[in-house]
Image: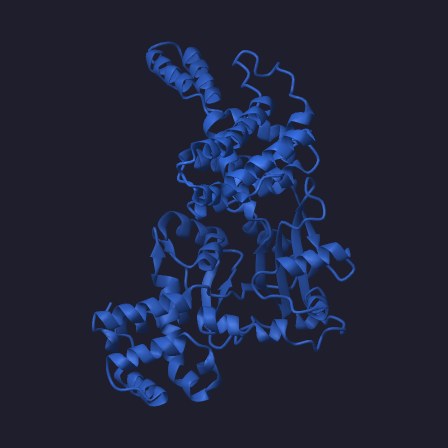
Length: 504
């Protein structure tokens, strides 16, 4: 463990760094003596980082001794964890940059082996394979060994999950453009994908009898439909409901991804009936009333596991669990939000207005009704009035406006889900997730989420992605390899209407 004097010295130097600019302005940049005095601890802080890393990041063993070298002491991993945890956000960036740059791949060794591999192409296969194996080993970053050893100490896996969350934040915020940081992220993701493979995960059903700590985390982690209170939570794990989570032995008591399921007679077309009605809170389940399983919320709880496949495996495991409990059940579907639809629509309206194509989005009769409902003039002002209207949730309280806007918003939403692409795949992340799993884009539902959040994000529209179990493998292959979206006639009909009105 790092000594207290070292931590104290580092914290003092950090404070000096933060106040250096202020002191420089107050005392004058010309006062060289003062400037140098405050610069000294900064260099000491960097030296402290270098000293820590030099001590805890063991050199990569030679190729010949890679399986014979004794493991470094556990204290190295603990020292790294404690030191990193003591840093603030800015200093973590500097520390991770130094780790990834100075203790990454030995590029000189890689280059030499690459040349050697080219020279051995006319040799026997055994020689070529050995040189390839040496090259593969030399591509291992030096810090990877440290990460592996950290994973073996208590709390180490959770530490590395949180460490990757920090790295992802650095990349997404563009706090650093360093390719070394991106390489560190790739190494961490690869390791976490191995450690959190499906065979190492445990499926747990969460009930009202589950430990209080787990129930509290389930409530805190719910990202789709926030839990309002304990009664609400009790409803979501009670009769006609199921809540499942994947856990990992290295992170006890920590749900990794959580799936909420409603057991219903038919495929639900609105979220109000699932999360806001409490009629069945204390009732006994009637198996005869359970024909469908509705996946209405799936939340990943660990930012550091982004990109590690967990959610799709969880749905497949839960389907098997439900089939075992309810052999007659044949309908499996999501009831999914459509994040990003409203903002996309706002942008589309602005674009069409600038291009003078506002009339293309709605029919002439629909524009007349919008103008009457919003008291706006014909033409561009009506487009702007509609854009502003969508930006609020007030229109949802007007039956007249709901009736006027329904056909236009439904076909616009259908096009957003089906026609808007990113690299050939669905732009909407929720759509992309379910389509990758092999689901069918089955039904759009009007006024399915009338909460302020639902109206703001997707104009209150939700979508069912239906899982036809005999077709999911084929659908998944078509989507992943050929970028084909399997869609129902309802959605295709709405898409066709949009293309006709928008002259596409």
